[in-house]
Length: 269
Ligand code: IPD
Ligand code: CA
Ligand code: CA
Image 1 (cartoon, protein in one colour):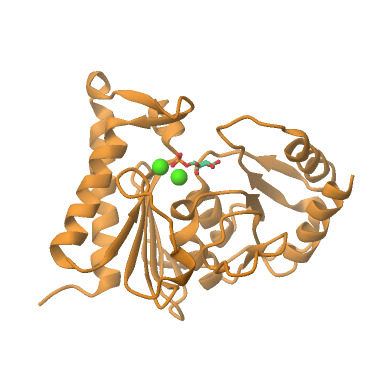
Image 2 (cartoon, helix red, strand yellow; image 1 turned 135 degrees about the horizontal axis):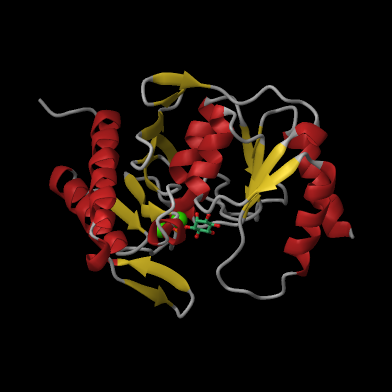
């Protein structure tokens, strides 16, 4: 008998996690390059991407796959209703290539335009976050919940910065206000884990512009853990909020409106 989709997804994320963990032990064998001249990619990103896609194709030959390294075509994503897998083979590649422990494999499965199963596995600390709609959020086999904090001045807020350095004015303005009004900030370098860390209360809030593979799995985990997940700017018409990748904001329901207001205040100058 076949494993269910959630069982299959968790086993796949954990075996891909084991693959990237092992690959990094071979320091001599690890090679890296810069996509588009700026974005770091290692041979382990490519290996894990192929490993995950091959396993999905073997079991579900008709399903669509969106994978950062081998199939990054996001065209018509908001209108797509069929079975869809969204994969980041290594989220946190810069951490990975520098020997840090904050990297993860992220796999989401969507149907009817909604994520039905999300798994984020950090093999370096043996932590797998997972969720299905209505099933709560889990870290390994323990249920997780967002932190109960209600005051911005006590909140630890994470964010990230784009690889391509354009005009940084807006980013710096937001950062300055968050730093001023909140307890502290973190830049951990793996968006999927930032969101899962909000889900389990290690962080109180998170905001950033991302790509869909960074957050597809983690957004479900965060919602199932009681977080409010959304956007601090309006979502453009015709774009599904489920897959909208800009101005993402995650926090518990008490802090979400406060961070929403803060980030918009920063933009007003
Ligand atoms: C990156 C990480 C990082 C975020 C970047 C992402 P990658 O993913 O999630 O935290 O700030 O926007 O691109 O490149 O390591 O898969
Ligand atoms: Ca990523
Ligand atoms: Ca990646």
